[in-house]
Image 1 (cartoon, one colour):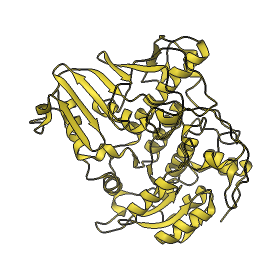
Image 2 (tube, one colour; image 1 turned 90 degrees about the horizontal axis):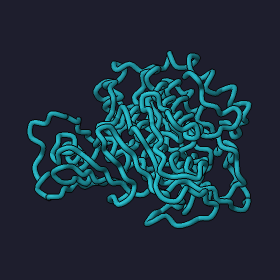
Image 3 (cartoon, helix red, strand yellow; image 1 turned 180 degrees about the horizontal axis):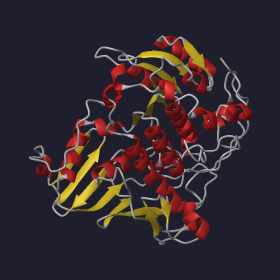
Length: 439
């Protein structure tokens, strides 16, 4: 067990050495699991969400190891789920050849390094949403998953909901005719507040927790995601509510528009230019905080306009078409007129596989070596439109203008008319934490 990780050590054991050196012997063929075999898991990051995911999976899997930069938390949770190994450095967990898959529930800025290293180590992956903290990170994760033939499920659990599936089936099969508009919540962008320095708790590796980000003075409010605000609202640890809660709602938009391999053509903002916030304003009806203006718009293929504002709750969207509207949110689907989705779609031209449950779907796909409902490309594309919303706001702050339509090339994942926008395709990184050019 290694309690302290230096940046030099990270470089030595980082992306470059993690790929070919360790991956090949650990690839798990479909035949490796018998019908009654239990998959062996490791948990990386066991805060609130991590504990819930690992504990839920422990009913069907064996938990072999836990890794968390706050060692006392890792030790306490490992004992509760019968895990024999505890680490502060997740890469030590990845060295276990008997671990088949990992559950990644770290803060957002650590998702990409953990996912890429796990794929290189031959582990299948369940990673909480948003899959990434930047657009470039998402492409690298997808490349790693494909190269090492891994099964990745993104934690956008609504894709496994029965009612959500019913609503999306109607949208995709034309029940409301051609979709013309999509309404989503007005998600907040991250801010840059300052807090006074506090003593770092014993057993917490604060430098490693900050990872690619330049470490600010430790403060409990930053570290603990139960605070309001917390790291979820702070650059560069997260994209704010736009990527956090938007990771659910805007994923529904992508799913309903059939954009799992693509995305919008344009993104723009209207209103006063974005203004970085160093204070802590309340988000409208939100758990986290940050600036929520100017308003964001996107244009998808087929002249479909998505507006962030005036939509349903943060977990869903409203699809407006020629014959009515369908609202899909957490655990619910409804329509106007109500009778539009009263019955299941008959003889659907577009078929969408029903998930047996988000964790169950992932485990089944591990054994059968196929894509789950929230696979890597889908997770990356949904995170991308969240990032595009933030980028449009940030560009307005740089230029002092709004209304300019930033043209997005979804195939090459670059703006074709905004050098300012392209500067935000990745986040700043400390030396030794760079993304690999090749995975």
